[in-house]
Length: 302
Image (cartoon, rainbow, N blue to C red):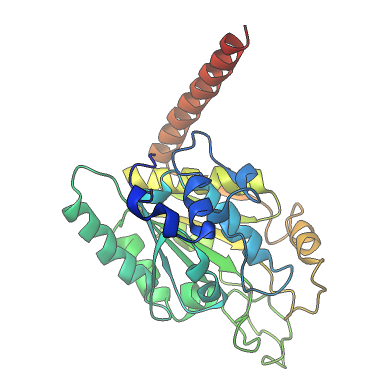
C-alpha cells in the first residue's frame, strides 16, 4: 500500500478543510500491519456515522474497513439498507447498487477493473444485509458464486429487514415474532453458509462481530483468497437492537450470547484445500513480517 495516490496537491493544501487534511495525513493507507486497533484514531475508519446508537453494524463496518489488505485498491459495493447510511462516510471507493443486484454489479465491476488494470490488483467487496443477500438478491448472489467471480461477499445478518419496519427475512430464526411478522417465522433459518460452500465458495465463515481480532483475520483471509482463487463469503451477525427489543448498550452481549457453542452463530469456518494452502502461506509471511519489524525495533533501540 502507498499514500502516493492519496495525497493533497501542495498548491491546494492551505485551502483544504482541516478535517480533510487530517483524513489524508492520519489515514492508515500505507501503514504496515494496519488493523482494528487503528479504529478510533484514524478518520477514514468512520469517525462518525448516522446509524442508531450502539448499532453492531457500526462496529462491524469499522473493523472491516480497518482490515482491508489494500484499501486504496478496493471498491466496495453496497445495497439498499442500513449500510446505505454509512457508505457516504466511507473513505474507500464504493458503489450503491439497487436492492438485491449487488453481486451482479460486483461481477461486472471486478471484470472491468481486471481489464482496465491488468497489471494492478483491484479488490471488490460486497456488503449487504440479509434481505439483499438471501431474499431479493439470492439469484445474483448464487450466480456469482457459480461463475467463480473473484470477490468477497459479506452479509450483515440482522435476521430481519431492519430498516423498513421489521419484516421477516429468510435468515430470521424460526418462531421469531417481529413488528411486521406477527405470527412468527414459519420455517428454519436458511443455511446460507452451507449453500455458499456447496456453490463453490473457497472460504466461508459464520460468526458475530464481537471479537475485532477475529473479524480482522477472516476479512483479510476472505479478500486475499478471493483475489487469487475465487468467491468467498462471510456471514456476520449484526443484530438490530431496535427491532429485537434491546437497549443500545446490549448489542455486544446479544452477539456474545448467540456465538456460544451449539448456537446459530457459533464460529464456523470452511476453506477449500487451495484456500487452506494459501492462508497458511499468508500466515507464514505475516509471522516473518512481524519478526522482522520486532528485530528492526530492537536494533533501533540499541
